[in-house]
Amino acid sequence: MKRTHIIALVFVAILIGVLTTMLSKGFSRYESFESKYAKQGKEFTVVGYLNKEKGIDYKPEINPNQFSMYVIDERKIEKLVIVKKAKPRDIEKSEKVVVTGKMNGDVFEANEILMKCPSKYKNREQQANNGQSI
Image (cartoon, rainbow, N blue to C red):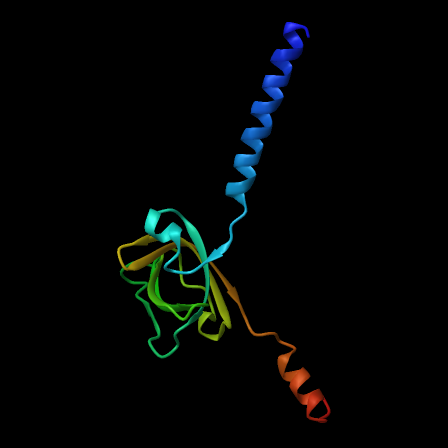
C-alpha cells in the first residue's frame, strides 16, 4: 500500500471514532434522579410528574428567570427541581415534565424544561366515549 492510502485509512478511522463519540453523547436517554449520571455530576434528562400538592415556588420580583418545584420521576423518586428559566405558562396543568440538568447535592438544577400538556381533544374523546354529543 502507498503511504497516502495508509494515512487516508487512519484519517477515516479517526473520523469514524469522533463521529461515533459525538452521536452517542447527542442522544439523551431518560434517566432517574438516582441514575449513574447523577452520581457522576453529568447532565441528564428526567421525565416525571409535577407534585401539585407541594406547588411551584416562583418569585418574579426576586428572580424572574428561576422557579422551583417538586418532581416525581418514573421510579417514584421525588426531588426538588430548580429551573433556571422563566416559569412556563400553565405548567400546573401539565401531565408530564421533562427536565434536563445536573444534580447538585440533593437538588436537581435544570437548564431546560419541556411540558406535556393535556390534549385539547381529551374532553371531546371522553364525551364521545360516553355517548354525548359534541
